[in-house]
Length: 126
Image 1 (cartoon, rainbow, N blue to C red):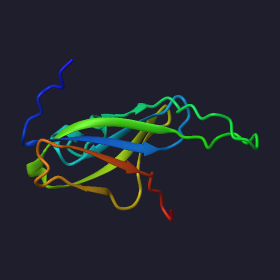
Image 2: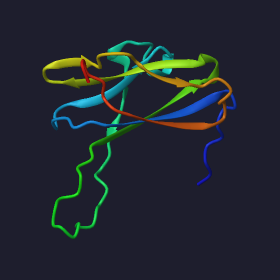
Image 3: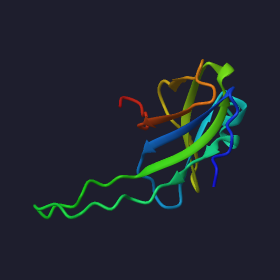
């Protein structure tokens, strides 16, 4: 399998965040670029829950630290430059958007590359 040829003006951006959510809730990412839903929570990009990485038992018998990683990918034109984005949780009780300042990634000059972010959920006072 050959990697699909990437557009030299596009950045393939992988979002990754560690957030524990109940099974019936899903996590999404939204931002100003069209491919991130144009800041509309309804059109936010769905992330997928990654299976936990197998950790061999620790000698002390303590359980390994729990990880709850979510990951998703979007292709964004490098002309978007500085991209601000937020994470959105959707579930039976409605939609929750992250508090606080948006996350920022700089895409200028990154066309044809892949970039990865690793984020934490931002909440008020956190």
